Amino acid sequence: MRSPWKKILLLAGVLGLAAAQPGNPPSLGYKAVPDWPQLPPGWNFGETSGVALDSREHVYVFNRGPHSLVEFDSEGKFVRSLSEGMFTRTHGLRIDRDDNIWAIDVGAHVVLKMNPQGRVLMVLGRKGQSGADHTHFNQPTDIAFTPSGEFYVSDGYGNSRVVKFSREGNYLLEWGKKGSGEGEFNLPHAVAVDVRGRVYVGDRENRRLQVFDANGKFLAQWTHVGSPWALEITPDQRLFLADGYHNRVLLLNLEGQVLGTLGGPGKLPGQFDFVHAIAVSKGGDIYTAEILNWRAQKFVKQ
Image 1: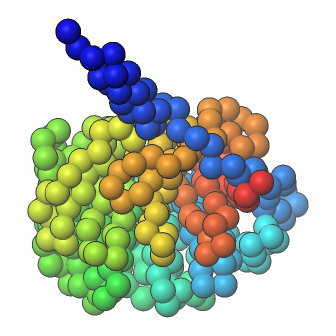
Image 2: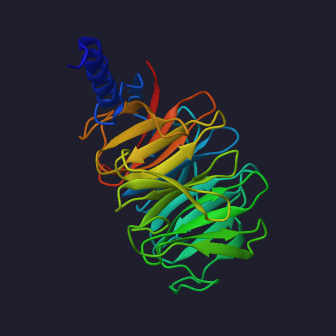
């Protein structure tokens, strides 16, 4: 006969496992900042696909409206619009340690590197031409940088691969194909790199996150995090994940444990409708971009 203590311990373990699942993680304890940001009179965002921070913690919002790339200070005050008329269909946006702006134009099949003034410094891909070779993309989605300046592009809607480049933009290697096996993708939508050089890929339509070494060797997959639409690894090595289909942001450690959640489905402040991008300030403020709500939001600790 099984000891009652063993039954109690078994039940406690089951309950503990259930509590750790992403269906019921604790709240991160953030609130949305009202009326953030302040656009000029008569301006509106379109579908809002990207958000990123520079070294001054100015916030850049990438969207599919008439002013595609707009800069604000951290309080939401309008600073400028730049690169007017340059983009076909905005997607991912990142800013590197030198404040260069990297913009992913999913409609034109290109990745653009611009200096802080908006001057184009590098073009990867051929504008308006899709392809699967070393010089083309097919609807790329995101970019992530290593400490040494190498970078990875998730090439995304058409090619189902991740491509690694040198800091000078030279092709180094790639991995992935369409599928659901280890190292395969069904829309690699987001990419991030930790301090150990591990590469995290949001495999959106397979609803999992895959982890690789720096050369694309499969290490792990997390199938409990929903659908990863955006990834952000903070300097203290916490992982923020935008789960677009469930309209929430998850905080995880780098072992995949869910530590907390933010948001929920809806149209009100603090809620999401297709949360597509995320950025986190040095002080822990969270910025999000949403496709269907046509907005960016700022969240601060309560």
